[in-house]
Amino acid sequence: MDLAALLELQRIDSEIDRSTNQRSRLPEIARHVEAEGELARVRREIARVRKAQDAAHAELDEIEQKSAEIDAHHRKLEQQLRTIIAPREAEALQNEMAGLASRRNDLDDRGLELLDASAAADDELAELTASEEAAVRAVEAAATTRRDAENLADDHRRELGERRATKAAAIGADDVARYERQRAGNGGLAIAALERGTCGACHVSLSVSELDAVKRTTDVPECPHCARWLVR
Image (cartoon, rainbow, N blue to C red; front, side, top):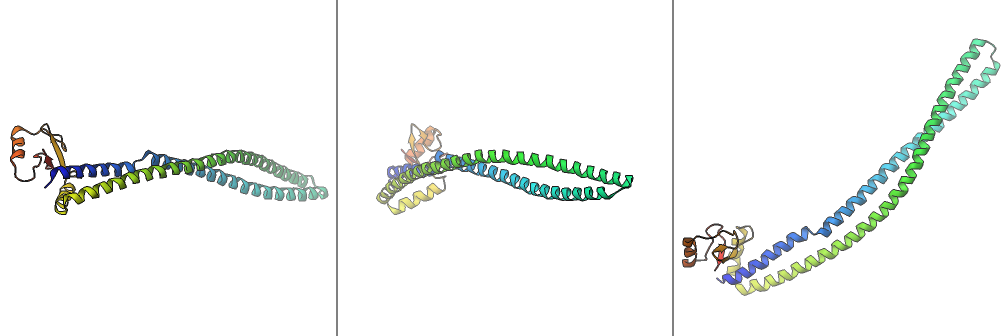
């Protein structure tokens, strides 16, 4: 078994793993997601303001209808008042008319409040619409930047895949299969260099007796601490 070649294959595989991990953690992805979140937030605000404005308009319609009913009733009472002679009846009508006038004033005050709120909503919607347009542009720009970054990362991974295929083909199918099993059972790291008596995988220094056992083995040498293959 060509352990040196397998170590080179491991280095390529480790680089592929890092590249895959980095691909999913590209800052351009986070910025794109953040831009989409801001656009969604602005659109929620627009929906909230429009809903409140629609409710205000609906209430204004109700006020207009009630005001018209009060005005009609008030005119009817005025006509009745002209035909009444009895003071008590006249006083009752006048009290009722005063109550109607008070209700009418309350409705007018509420209508003015709603009109002011609607005008303020128009101003807020204008600002939010401008923010939405800016947010859309930000999302589009972030999406382009993200796509470019992802394409670059994908190109790098394809290049690594081609390098790996070439290296694996030069090693031999049986050894690669055994390496893959070793790699799968050890968290993606099958083999490491033994440098200055230290395992390059778990970074534990081997004792003199452990180093001697590694040197004397007739099988593939393994780290006594992490079981990864060692290249002396």
